[in-house]
Image 1 (cartoon, helix red, strand yellow):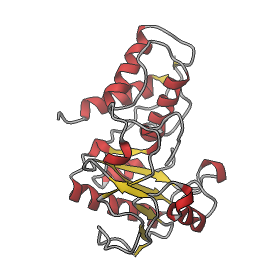
Image 2: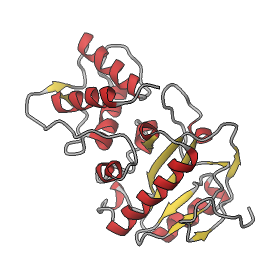
Image 3: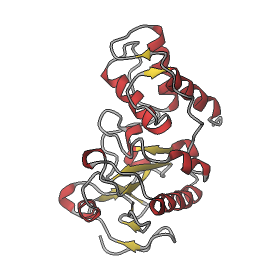
Length: 251
């Protein structure tokens, strides 16, 4: 791809990526990732090279600089096998933002303040221009819970929400009262699966708390109840989910 004009005035540099194609749909999801590589340089190089078969629209560096790799009008290849609200074409419907962080494999440090400020500003700009609803600002782990865990439990979704980005309620405090866990079956599990599906997560509603359900619960916790990510649907997790559903505007 040749150089192109950036979509956002917040872009510091355009670095055209090789991998992209036509969308086929208007973007209505803003999808957050972390790069998950040891260095920013390696991550950007991989996102730009053809052999990687991946790309994204934006990269936010640790110091807050913003790179654009693919125009928003084109589909970048960042979500992989994924789904949300029953739709599997997440790449076609989303704008992908890669946030430089080595991730869980390389120590998973906190996201620096300048970087978070830049993510907030960029997200506000994109959501305003594209009219993306707060509840469709999502994590990679939300749309691919069995494969991905980024941007992870250290990503400050509460700070984004305070700035008007994303859907959020204060998590219900954790107690030690147990909860639904792997291996359990029955109506309570089916009710949990139904509520997670109503929020948008892709999972089978079969009344069995198997690995797929545990992965979705962990994804939910990484986004909305970050203090403990264990895949156990305790009262804190379930009550936070119910409160999120109650707070979501009718469409």
